Image (cartoon, rainbow, N blue to C red):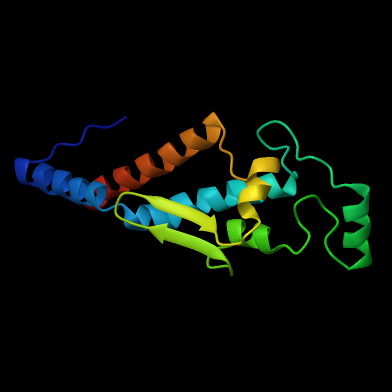
Length: 148
């Protein structure tokens, strides 16, 4: 435990730095927040949908047979790996990544992604995931205070 005394100018400078960081959170969103989201998505694909409850529906026997015959990944939701890569790897093909000062959108332009999300949700956040994202933002704002 410690006590830190600062004069008004130091406090004002630090508060202004935190306010500026809060007003333009693009670096935080496209950096550490996106890293958390990519990690969550990777865990969802690794578990074939079991992470966070539930599980993806099994492939039909005929689809599994076709995947195996064509050298595709036999795991559920992994056939070509395009969707997985788009949702788990920064700057992957077919990824749509837009960070602004106040928002972050990560998605894909793959035509089958919407149907996949409906039948085998790959975008799902638990309450703990949301808390982790809030904690990352909080840590970054505290760091802005220290740098201020």
